[in-house]
Amino acid sequence: MNSSNHSKPLTHPVLEQYFPVLSWLRSYSRQDLHGDIIAGIITAILLIPQAIAYAMLADLPPQLGLYASILPPLIYVLLGTSRTMSVGPVSIAAIMIASALTTPEIAELGSPVESAVILAMEGGLILLFMALLRMGGLVNFISHPVLTGFTTGAAILIIFSQLPHLMGIAKPQCELDATCYVQSLSQFNPYTLALGLGSLFILLLFAKGMTPLLKKWSLPSPIIMAVSKSAPLIVVIVTTILATHFDLSENHNVKIIGAIPAGLPTLHFDFVISDKWRLLLPYAGFIALIAYVESVAIAKVTAMMRNQRIDANQELIALGGCNIVSAISGGMSVAGGFSRTMVNYSAGARTQMAMLIAIFILSLAVIFFTDWFALIPKVTLAAIILIAIYPLVKIKNIYHTWSYDRDDGIAELATFLGVLFLGIEQGLMLGILFTIAATLRKTSQPHIAVVGRIPNTDHYRNIKRHQTETWDNLLLIRIDENITFSNIGFIEDFLINELTSHKNLEHIVFILTSVSHIDTTALEALENIKQSLEKQGITLHLAEVKGPVLDKLEQSRFLEQLKPGLVFFSTHEAVDRLTKDLQG
Image: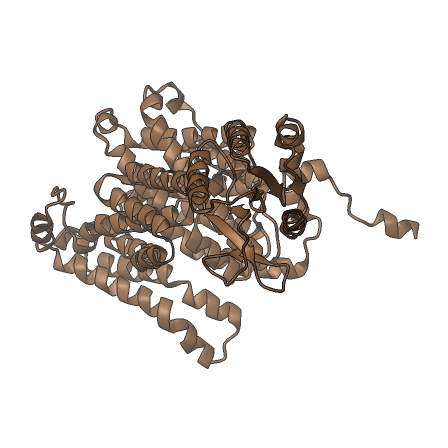
């Protein structure tokens, strides 16, 4: 018995809270390792070309994407609460970085690499500051429609930014001139376009048709997953061989990545003395916010599939640490990547050990194969970005949102159009403002119903929706919203309108089933309403008051002033008592 007790693993609740890696290491098994090895290899296959591609998307040297895929994921392994999320460069953050770096006041300062590193550092510090304030719940303040409109708009911007790479032309300087843009694209490089279309074909073939085909051959699931997810690496290898064999770079002006420094990233702090920090801070805030919201959303998706838990505040710490380490090691801003995370999860990853294996493979590649990376055609990376981004374009979702809730639909559409025509940060702010405005409008004009009793029952419903019985001397009013300074005027107007159509009233009952809070302004207004009704010979009562609301009312003078009005446990009790009084 004693030996059995001594063999149990020791738990460290405090350490596990800040280093979640300990929670899964305690129970790590050989079966977990088997799944993690396969997932790590498959994730590395996707991670290498994506890291380079997203650096290109941000108009940065490729090593910034590679460096951001080595040490930052290692920090997440130690601090993150998701067991399958893959942290590294992501498309949305990359396009936001590109947007920030092309801002005139920042671009004229030069050194985009230094600016990108500062963005990562500032973003990390912002996330850690949010963690200090325990603002993990901030993820709930950006509505899903706004986030969808934002990602759709950003994805379309990314697609247009990659079309010049796909066609082998310089980036058009056309702004919103569609004719100019089309004319620029018409001057395409046929060799570049051929490589790009071939890459797109292979990527689409693997994405749509390879898995069903391999399943028909009854191959093991790990092999099917490995083959179907290896398309990015295959197109990189094939196009690089073709470009090298036919010397397309020299003879036909097919752009390649160029030299990449070999070796692991080194830590440096040169950027600390830069004078760009203040200018970059607003952009870093937006990038950090979106990185956090998307990362937590992705982490929750995979965690729910396995009945695991995500600690939103700990994610702030983990992602903050990842971005700080990325900056120190010369990388770009990082977040949880949706496509990599889903590949990691689908490939059988059980824990973050899969990411350790992927990091090891990537490190070997950065040490020994950077000369080969230098020969990769840029058009291939553009194709990889296009295929990864296309699922984020959800224009139909705007229509569906609009059909269900017009306010959410307007917010989603405004965000989408704002991102396209005003800018990424401006579009996001516009969507948030529309959401806040819609919320304020809804709370300032709450749903209020006059209710009556369903005949021969104890149920009370809206008289406009159901056949009910009512009383000439008794009015039941249900308020379906918290009562605050923003809506008490609307409630007063509603009551005045009802009083004009009910001439013989003796009792009014406010049914507060849906009221969880009454603020000070509203409480004073209720006192005035009570006094006004009393002068008209009408008694005000309350029914179905929630405990927390009743506790606060008892701390004020309101219940004393309400007399002879009463507080009833239920609407039926109020009706039973008051109708008897009326009959008596």
